[in-house]
Length: 244
Image (cartoon, rainbow, N blue to C red; front, side, top):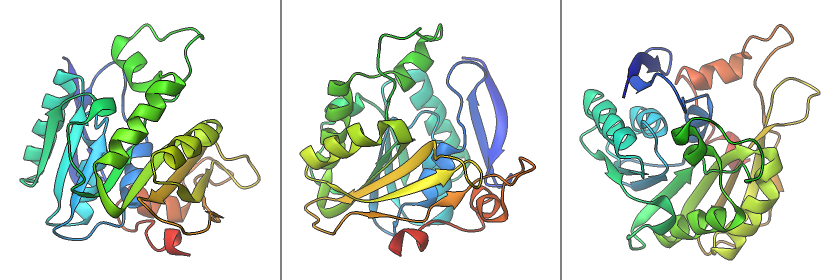
C-alpha cells in the first residue's frame, strides 16, 4: 500500500494514511473530541481505518486502553504503526469485522463513523472506499448492535455521520439498547443546513433526547471558525458542549 505522511492536531501527531482510496477527513478528529473518556478507561472504535480517531483521543486523554477494529488488514497494520509511532502503548489495532465483534461488555466508550451510503448508486471504483462508505440497513444495524454489546452498563456509544443517515442511526441505536439521547449538528456555515451530525447514547440510559446548539465549521470566507480550528488543532474538545 502506498502511503502519505501527514499529521493531526495541528502537526502534533504524525499520521500516515493511504495515498489513494479512503482518506481521513475532519470526521475522526471531531469524533475523538466528543468522547468523555478518562484515564484508565477502555475505549473501542469500530472501523478504525488508519487510526486517526484513536490517535486524536489518546493524545488528549492519557492512560486509555483503546482498541481499534478494522477488517482491512493493511489499514489495521497502518493504524498499529501510527499508534506505535505516537507512543500509545495502550492502544491497539485488531483485524476483525466490526459487525461481528467477539467481545464482552467491558468497554466504557464505543465510537465509530459507520458505513452509511445505501447501495444502488454508482459504486466507487476503489474497493477500500466502497467498504468504508457503503452499507445496507442491515449492516448498519449489526454495526451498532455489536458496538453496544461491547459496552458496560451506562457506557457511551458515539457515532458521527451525515445528517441524512441520522434517522437510521437513531433507530439502530434504540434497537441496540443505546437509544440516542442527544444530537449535535455541525453546520458548514451560518444559515446552512447541517450535513454532519454527532449522535450519542448510553447503554441502558433513559435521558431525554436533546438537540444541542452544535458547531459552525466555516466562516463566510471558507476558513475554519476559531472554535472549529481550536478543536482540529487539539486545543479544545467538545465534551463540555455535549453536557449542556
